[in-house]
Length: 114
Image (tube, rainbow, N blue to C red; front, side, top):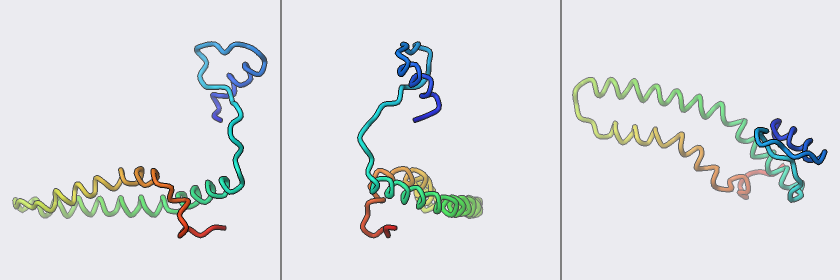
């Protein structure tokens, strides 16, 4: 349910054909949601919201420190292969934050339930 979906929903309920230039889709009923699903979704949202600030602050600090250290080391005109490897590892961190959500981490038995 999004705000642009209100117009097509009202038009469909009134029996009026939705014009092709209207953005959105009419609301429709789907599968019923259990209270356990709602609790799990709330737990996942609360966990992510609580960790986001710490994670991105730490990652930004680590990135700046890495850039400064890399500049100092590479400015001495030495070929340091580990700096490239570390740069690739640092570049993988933002992507991994999306990949981790492909796994059902919120269903893990090690996460405490309310």
